[in-house]
Image (cartoon, rainbow, N blue to C red):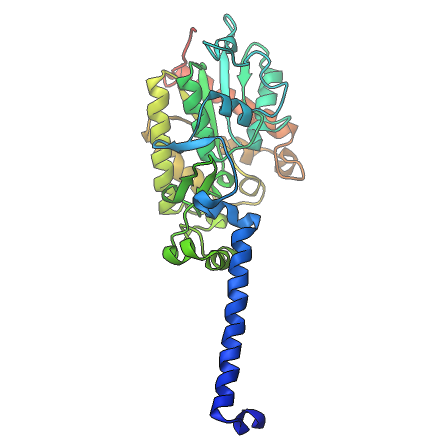
Length: 346
């Protein structure tokens, strides 16, 4: 202990301690005030109804989130002007124009492996000119994709078949933030409740910021996205069962058959990662009455696996052609074996 401190009287030492405590308190108050007046953007998803973000959503008992109305869906969902030339909404029968006489209609929902230019939806358009391919051209959260399907079907949209793509990367947000933590604000934004030290984080932005920056704000801290090819966390599996149970029910009510595409990732195809993701979810989805397409064998049997991908690890043209070819072969096999129901007619 420094001699100067020892030599001081007790009252002097007390003043130093009090002064230090006051300085710390002032800094904490200032930090709290700054975080309340101007919260950083990384806190927005965890501020609940205090979040400054707006959105087009409302709460929903099936998928946690739904669109407020048709117009909010149209404004939010479509980003590519050439995607839906025949599917523009109109008054009355909003999507009647999405059906051409005698032309099969397929609806595709998924991440950038479906939506991005040159990926599955565009590949299907080029290769299947007799089909009308519906997709939004925009990546969305898993729950939002499901909300889009629900709204479209309730608005009269009746594709011959609906395709729903799912990959390990699609679960990197749902995994750490389960459905139980999802909260749609009064302003229509999607946020997540922080359940760790919940009383403190509701009343202190400084405490919330500390948890977020340390990664302790997640509702499921046992989730590890790097393990998705080796195991599916039980909490995540339960959420997926809930979501896809509701998807199966809603599509069945509207008479629209569904194929779930469990597309393999780059690391699964080219780097030998395991397939626990597909092995866990395929039997679950089939038990729910959904058709499941798992093209892993064709990708693993390909002579030059790296050529199936571009540098950002999306599929190359060869990868997309292989994916579509296998999907069409899967549908033919299902139809031949009597396991594929395809909706026909308007």
